[in-house]
Image: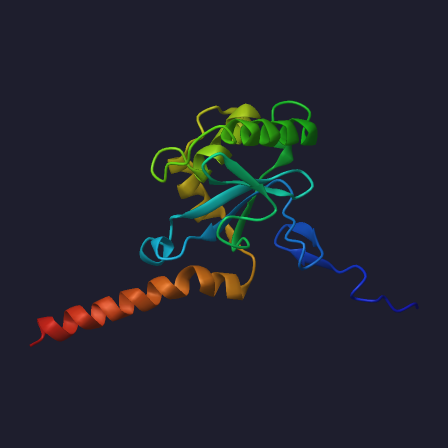
Length: 183
């Protein structure tokens, strides 16, 4: 049996889909998420979100008038939520990619607003354009909640990057409160 060089092509089963190349960060048909320093440390359910094309290229609204490609605004994804291509109204991958492209083009013309028109809104527009799950009511609130519920961490290190700062801050705060409360 011929030996396969691991550096040439590494195939790894990750979650419920095939991820090719450990460093390529390809998550086809996925919504990806990464923590925002300081903000996610206090509120770990709030972070930066992007949506991937059918080939796994990440598109994210990273700032006013800027949608990045394969370079998320706050680092590599720590969580992904695999969506079902069959729930796209239309021609599957082609409709998915067109919706991601159209949403990205729209957001290249918009200013970024942390509370009202942000990366979650960009992903919501893409899902609404493709009528994912036969719905046009995607928004940043339900995306935040659903990605928290259905999102899977890409690794143990990603899990720690997401939750460890929050746990440490909570521990320090609890220690501080208990110290002064018990005196």
